[in-house]
Image (cartoon, rainbow, N blue to C red; front, top):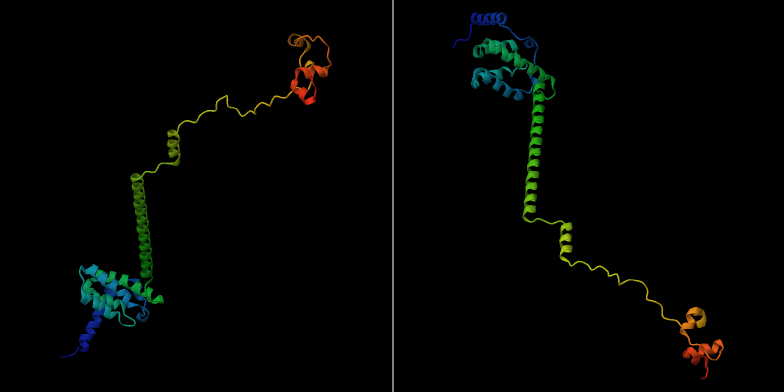
Length: 242
């Protein structure tokens, strides 16, 4: 097979130059990218998804074509757009490169070679995942509390417990009423024993009442003899004879 002649090569280069003048390019394509600082494996899923959205189906040929161009250390962004125009048309190729190139520029500035937009997106995904987990945990706690409350209410309905106050009232009602202390029964001390008078009867009884009770003596006697006469027990104690 014959190779490309110089005339054909010149015509191809002239066509590229003509396209460079005719096509519109995003301003970001003027900056160079060092692919040795870019983690291409992280960006490949985005390229696949974006091309599939533009074409409406997953075209492995176009996707691999883009990957191959990005294998160079310093890929030519504008030539990439020209090469993709035949597959994606002019407008879609321009929009694709306008979205791809800022990602590559951001990736080469980060130590991990990952675009900042991807890092922020990953953080947001982790945050949303944590929020969802907290919501699920909260719902699960509410559900568990509700189940526990239902079980407790069922247990109380099956075996109701009476309060101690009610039991005490019921027990006191069944007992017989207490007897009230009678007014006769009192705690007053018993009366003292009767003591013999130590004074003469004349001193114990008033003179007016004594005249109607005692007989008039015929013989006047001494107070001691009179006392012994009317109280025989004292006579015995004193030793008097009749």
